[in-house]
Length: 105
Image (cartoon, rainbow, N blue to C red; front, top):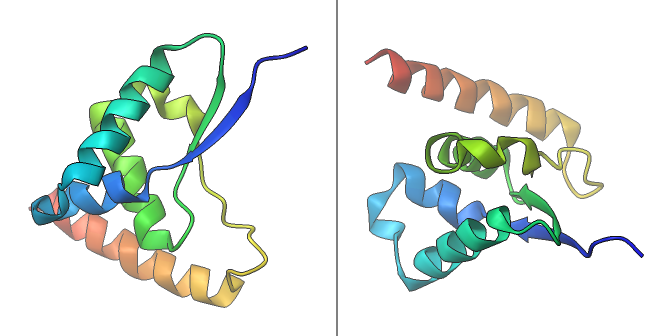
């Protein structure tokens, strides 16, 4: 029998990456859980952010900065039935533009 598979929504970490005020107790709990889960070899971990492209992009940035060794565990669930592909494409363009502007300054 294989290792347990865990999908962990880290949207809160992504939101806090660009909004320091959102670093509340739940942020710290999720961050600690990610820290410990990424170090375990007995769990197949997938990190994800499910609600919007903004949260996905922000969460990816957080993982790149805080847990670069876990980058291969991050998955973008953009093929969700509840997420419109037109909405995704539009939001992606806006977020990518904004992230590009932030990184250039």
